[in-house]
Amino acid sequence: MTAPLIVGNWKMNGLGADLVEARALAAVIARDGTPARVGLCPPATLISLMTKTLAGSPIAVGGQDCRPETAGAFTGDISAEMLADAGARLVIVGHSERRAGHGENDALVAAKALAAVRARLEPIICVGETLAGRQAGRALEVVRGQVGGSVPLELAGAPFALAYEPVWAIGTGLTPSLAEIEEVHAAIRQTLRDRFGDANEAPILYGGSVKPDNAREILAAREVGGALVGGASLKAADFARIIAAAG
Image (cartoon, rainbow, N blue to C red):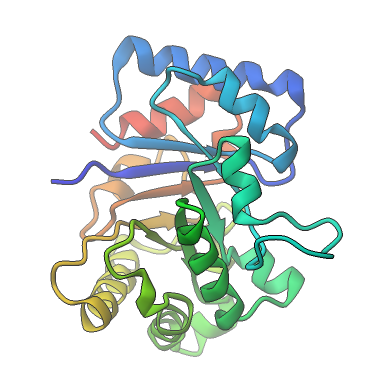
């Protein structure tokens, strides 16, 4: 079986002094090993520093977003090539906070995923329904549509991951039931098979209030191939427990 993928998203948190947590996590993995592939996605200001901090560690550093173009007059934006140049190996695209707060649609997310592959980064493509969508009984419809629109067919043969993050569960402490998680992950898997064939084994991560005390049962659910972790990834001790739960 493919090792699960556990990725920490630091969001807009972290200064140079906080790299002590990355060092501590690397030390735990060096001592205990890891049952998973592990990634950390800090703010762009820390990517280069974190890459140097984690040199020799199996922890992959990633970006939290990228622009589709390689370069240009896009003040404040970062291309996938720039992330790779800074040492990144992964990049999150289409996070719900980008979709909601920056108006990103499926077509833009798909373009960012293609840019990531162009730069030899592994994109983590996020999908997920809002509370209104869940309550209206449209969760599967919404997620299938996002997968269809956000995962370009050109990704066939390239490494990528999906992340299911129910928007209403992010940072709220709420989580779907295991049955609900499995239902959505199964729908995502079938959509991927319909698009890429049965050979596609892209991991489907769960994201949404993943914590040390619920990680083991979530990661044991059918078609859950890892986790995209927010706040609990900021502290090495908490994130290490989540990683260990994948074993």
